[in-house]
Image (cartoon, rainbow, N blue to C red):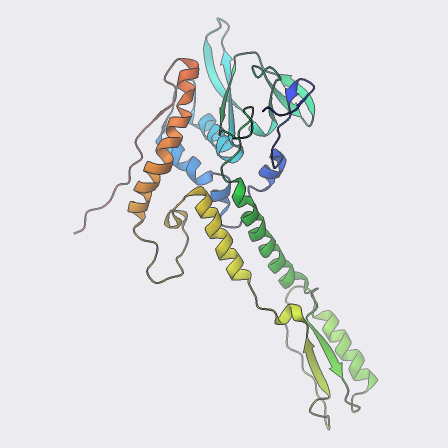
Length: 306
């Protein structure tokens, strides 16, 4: 089954538009490198062997596109004699396939702005079980965790900066308080909003009753604060979706036992994740008929104990 076509190129049928995926890249504080593939990109870049047709800079952009969107595009620039000159990255966010699945367009919105020459674009894609035109990133199911993580952070930030939440009700029944005292208290509470809104207020009430001034908390304040639980749970969901050991991401363990040896985790990660990705990018060699993509083995040097 193929996506519906519009004009000359295929419209992606995806749970999310590519713009939404691109907007989610920096959604998670401290874990964005897990969401958008920066960590895996860095490992692949460290093992990549540059070629005269494919520089490390172009490879880094290509790898980041593939890990973020599930699609990576390289345009083969040719010299005047028709031979290969160099590969250049075509931004995956704006690339579309033609209805014949042979040609490619770079679009501006829904307008086809540039058509690539036939046979000059290599499309590396993460297979989708529903269609065969575009790829989908494997982490789509974890985006909800990323958005929840972002929402929790934004809520917490607004809570501290604005102070616009309903904190409590000040209930005054003491007849000893004058209208001037009430007005001064109201003004002090109004000025307590904004940055540094958590302040102590002093109230002098001579001959006042014990319950003359009461603070009635609102349910939003008395509810259990789940901020840290949300941050930890969503972080774990993101790490599980990308199968990245937490000790490689610089995450501080919350338990006394820790996460285990980082070098052992790196070896398993390299065997199960990096090597398959290296073979995936090597598909360009079959398309071109030349060995352009090569990698050094991913290995971790361990120091011998004294």
